Structures are given as C-alpha cells and as structure tokens.
Picture (cartoon, one colour):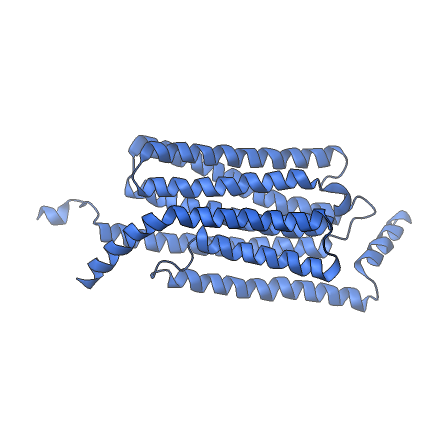
Length: 129
Length: 201
C-alpha cells in the first residue's frame, strides 16, 4: 500500500521540476565554462592560482552536471549508483594521483625536470641513439 | 490458466524494476569508462611536456574554436535532456525532433573535432610527431569515438521510436542514452580544462 503511494507521487514531481533542473544546469554550465575561458584568455591569473582556479571551476561544473543533468542521488533507489560513483572516484584518485606522483618522483630522482629530460632525449636522438 | 501461459504484459512495477537493474548496469559501465579516461588523462599529463623539440600546446590550440566546440556539445546535452522530458510526457513527434537536434549538434561537434585533427596532421603535428601529440590524439580521439558511437545510437533509437512508439524497451534505451550523452559532456569539461585551458595558459 505504502509502496504504491511512493511510486506515484515523485513521478509528477519529476516532470514538473524536470525542465527547470535542465535550464538551471545549462545556465550554470555555460557561466562556469565562459568564466574559465575568460580567465585564461585575458591572463587574469598565473601559476598555481590559475591551476587551482581552473581545476576548481571544472570540479564545480562536474557537480552541477551530476546533479542537474545526471540527477545522481535524486531517486531513493539509486544508492548503488552513488556508491559505485564514489568507488570510481577512489580508484581515480589512487591511480591517476599515484601515477603522477610516481612520474614526478622519477623525474626528481633523475635530477631533471621534464623539460630537461625532453632536451636530453632530443640531443641523444640527434647523435643517432 | 492463461495468466500462466501468456507472456503477460509487463506491469508498471516490473518495468520500473527492470529499468533500475539495467540502468545500474549501464551506470557501472559508465564508471569503468571514467577509469579508462582517467588512465588517458594521467598519460596526457605525464607526456604533455614531451614535445620532442616540436610544437607545444601553447603553439597549437585555437581557443575560440575550442570554445565553440564546447558550447555545441553543451547545447547538445541540454537538448538531449529536453528529449527525455518530451519522452516522459509521451510526445513522440517532439521527442523525435529533439533527438534529431541532438544528433545534428553532436555531428557538428564531431565535424569540428575532425577538422581540428586534420589541420594539425596536415601541418605535421600528427600523432607520430611527439609523445605529447600521441597522448593528445589518444585522449581527445577516444572521446570523439564515444561521440561517434553515440550518434549511431541516436540513429538506431530514433528509427525504433518512429516504428514502435514508446514501448518499455525503447523508453529504457532512451533514458540510458541520455546518461551516456551527459557523461560524455562531463568528460569534455575535463578535456577542455586540462588539455586546452591549462595547455595554453
């Protein structure tokens, strides 16, 4: 009985809020994209500040699209979707973060920056290696 | 008796349960695809300074062009959402029109991307030129390949919708397709930021 109650009510609610969810998501996504673009094209920031700002804007836009377009976590039955999403994030952090850490460590232990390594490889290939 | 023999019409609850199960399966596929893209992003970030004396990301990318690509894909994902709403409302013709618009925008995006690729390759900055360009073409090309598969999917689905109307199977595929298409836009946010914006900054 209660089950029936639950399944009929949210359906109409989704239909009503649906179009606004997409419109809000779209406006926010366009704004965030343009903001990041303007910052880069007009050189409004440099170095670490720029990197942090751009990655921050990308992360916010990720959240916007997950919530307003993909509707992650809206349905009460989507617990497993949310769980697998968090698990994917964990895997990404471990292996993307880990790869970058290992590679920068490697460069450090070779006593060379990637640019110097690049130059070294180029010199070697000029010599016919 | 007949209740047992006939492959009875699916009840609403059964359809809902099937959609939940299949959409979870599809969602898990999308999560594994995220891991695939994660590997390509890691490769790109490690290799993006390995230009082998050739052009760097500062020299190559045409930002207004990339912004246009980004906006086309964003509008496409929005229109796709509208198509799903139209499908929920049971409006077949409107759904078909919106799916057509999604297809055209997606095809425009793919066309822009391919023209960028061919311009780079014809100027000698192809995937063979350096580690940086190999990683670039692999990452952006894999995203483009997903878009191409999505276009094929829209085509098949529109045909099914046109022929059969809103059967449970067609509606389910429509919803799963919208997940796929939104997901591709999410991946593009990171390509736009990490490859292009940070590349020219």
